[in-house]
Image (cartoon, rainbow, N blue to C red; front, side):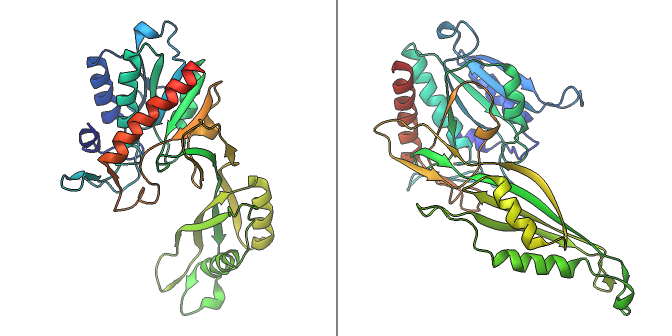
Length: 338
């Protein structure tokens, strides 16, 4: 099943095919499935959709008590699946982030509904970028009690996730002939100076050793080597152990009006509930959870390692996948029987 899902390219914005195919699969297995189209109101031709499924004999309201949730989209570039049968490893984009999560949840859910438990499935779009999928899912007004979110946590239940702050630094100059640079003003020079200064900052650190981190992810600017550049920008990502405002205050002081700061996306760190008997640890990445507005208590768990997610070596072992199925069942049984 995982190889089948990974065979469908579903980079952010291109999830229509996988949502439809997965919906057809679940329907054939007896699930009540609905697709929530994301952009039909503005683009009637768009097929991008969230997927909601529940087991009707166990769920009379359309709102399952417990929902397994993950995301349909992957980061680029697409890497076709490859199965190393000898070592029991599946390689390729989505292996652990997050199509492996979807498989471990579905197979757990299929066993749980046979036990009479009220569980459902919610798979959303654009977790890797805008989080619009979970934001639109809020409009479904589900009154579930528990939300088990699948991300690669190395099969540990997460105690907390770091916050995030994405910013763009924009630098404006004056174009000129490079033979007469004094007639213009470079947009690149002040941006480079700011980035250098930001890399020298000792960002906040918690007592347990968790650190605020900065990644300078994208730099662009200029038109040609013989033109003084009139525009340049850098896109940055902070992983936070404190509020976005506290980090933005430091950022403003360092920038000191040399470039323009645009706040693109942000949310603070979150602490999670845990389940007794399951190993736990904090994670340093962001998820859809900060954008979920429903009443369900969130839990974060999944097989596979974030250290290979988003890389050319993305992978998951069959042992991890099978253990993830069993642990998802344990989590659901504990929550629904407690």
